[in-house]
Length: 186
Image (cartoon, rainbow, N blue to C red):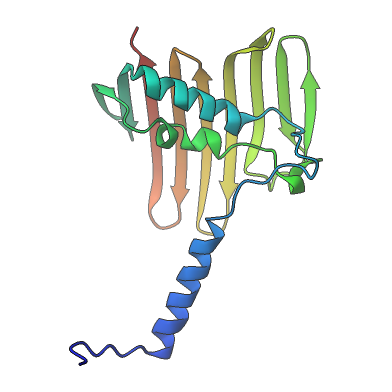
């Protein structure tokens, strides 16, 4: 019994196939260097650990969101810290293809990674440490193509404050400025 007859056109099949392929691309696991060690600081691992810690603590957050000069402030509890820190996690530079793509300046208390070419999304990372503990981290991202240009400045002070500043210029749509600041309540 065929109660629903569905006609699939060749164009619909092609679009569906492309959509499926793009979805499969997103399911790839993160890759480390071939011997399993990381060349650069493990940003993704650091934020996964902080995500687990903050999920367990479940702190209240004084969150301020500004879009093109309009500001809203609320005290909230973040239900998904992994999603909240997603831009930070996506800024991890430990991919095999990028193993020689960054210059490294490493002192006792500061690590600076700078992209050697302008085509890399993450252009600079600054990490201030006290012994082995991260005191703060600032990440700069930049993406530019024919349709849009995005600049991001991501700042994180563990157990205290995180901030995302983003400007996006989209062709035919104009410019948008975003700022998200979360202050953890003690």
